[in-house]
Image 1 (tube, helix red, strand yellow):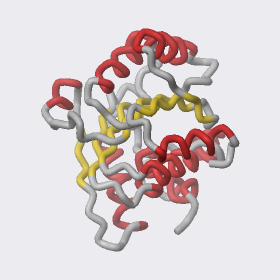
Image 2: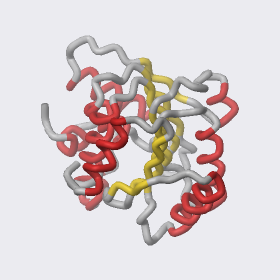
Image 3: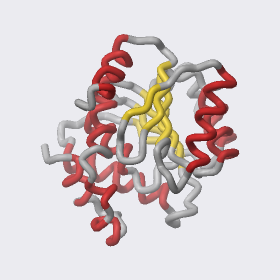
Image 4: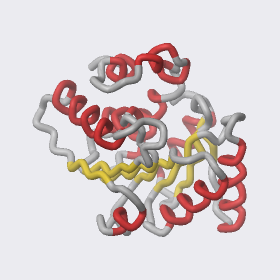
Length: 212
């Protein structure tokens, strides 16, 4: 199978200027999402802030265990991004996973809509990559924690142009007395292991040694 960057470049819905952005082809961005999913082997994945589905596809590629993918996007950056995300994910499954792989794809519009999907104690991995404000990240962390996931991770922890993300993570982790570690992806991925599993320990060691 092609590398994840080549797969993303082939998707039907990619803004032309994305191809020239460093993050789009960075070796420590989407390949790391693929590695995280490969190690953790989630069955149910939830993403807040999906945009066009790039990280979802990377994690689908990494985790053949995935049976259900749920996502939402406020569509503030790209109009109709939730539908375009679906089209990109379905394209990936049709073109690159041509083995009749069955994955349930579900989209939500807001938190109330998400609650109707009954993901409590069901979702294994949550990826938060939404609004970069302190308040919104804090709300996302609180809400997602309430779903009792095994793992949570939040992008942009090291993003210098979005310092409120790191402030929200640090504040929430301290208030909840939760430990986390940071995977050195393109913008830093804060990772919470809520399951205390051996898989997360492997992920931590690989991240610490920078060998993902």
